[in-house]
Image 1 (cartoon, rainbow, N blue to C red):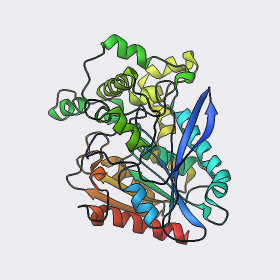
Image 2 (image 1 turned 45 degrees about the vertical axis):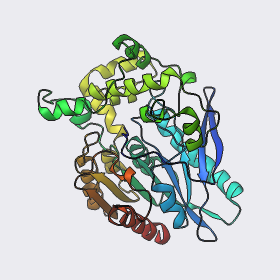
Image 3 (image 1 turned 90 degrees about the vertical axis):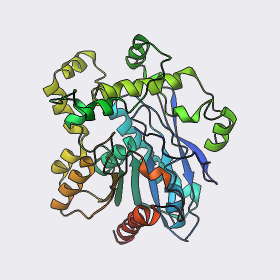
Length: 369
C-alpha cells in the first residue's frame, strides 16, 4: 500500500530485464542493477515492491534503494510477483521463492563468475514488499543473511487489518477509510466483479499508480522513466486503484489474500475465527515462534503511518530481540506511509538519519555472517 510522497524520478541505469518464471501463461520478470563499487564476490539485494498486493511495479524500487546499495558494492535485483485477486498470498510467496532460486542459478552467469556471492543475500521491500521480505526470512532456503523490512505487515491478525472489535465511528477510523480515494469512474458492482476474478491467467504484475498516468504523467514519460518502452495504459489500471481502495476501506485485504483455490474451503474463511487461524501462517510475527531462528533484521517505519501501524515493526523487533536476533531500527517521528521516498541521495534530508544507519547495519551483518 504505497502512496505518493515525492516527484517521480527516472529508473537508474544500467539494468537488464529477465523472466524468472512462467506460470499459468504469465511471464513473471525481474530487473537487475549491477553494483557500481567494489570488486570480487559482492553481496546482493533481492527486493519486492509495495502496492497492497494489488498494484505497483518492480522496475523502480524506492528512490534511495538502488543508489544506496550499489554505492556500497551490492548488486540489486527487483523481482515482480503476481497480484490480487487472481492469485493469493501463497502464490505470491512462491513467486518470491522462485525468484530466489532463479537468481542463485543465473546471477553468476549474468554478472560474471566471481562477481557475486549468492550466499551473501539481503532481502528487502516496502509495505506489501516488506511483508514479502519478512516472509522470505522464513521461507527461503538457504536463508538470507539480512532482512530489510520497510513498513511491512508482520502480523496479519492485527484488528487494524481484520476489523475485529474496531470502533468504526472514531475520527481515526474515518481518516483511515479516506486514506485511498476512489476514482469515481467505476460502480460498486464493477469493482466487486473485478475483485471476484480468480483466473490466474489474468494475473497482473505491474500496475501504475494514479500519479503515473495522464493527466499527471504522459505515457511517453512513464515509459521513459520506467525503462519499459512498450508499456500500455488500460482502464484496468485505474480500476485496480479502486479495488485496492475498497479492500483497504473494508478491511478485506487479508481475507482476499487468504483466499483458498477450493471454493468450499474458501467459504470457511468467512468465519472470523477460521480466518484468524489461517492468517497466523501469513504472519512472520507468529511464524518466528515456530522456526525459532531468524536473520538479522532492520526495520524502517514512520510513527504516524496510517496504512501500516508502526507497532507492526516495533512488536516484531521486540520479539526478535527475545530470540537473540540482531535488530536495527529507525523510526521517523512524523513519517507516514512511504516517508522514505522523499530521500533519494546523500544530500537529501533524512539520508544520514535513516539510510546510513540502515546500510551500516546491513553491511555489518552481511559481511560478518
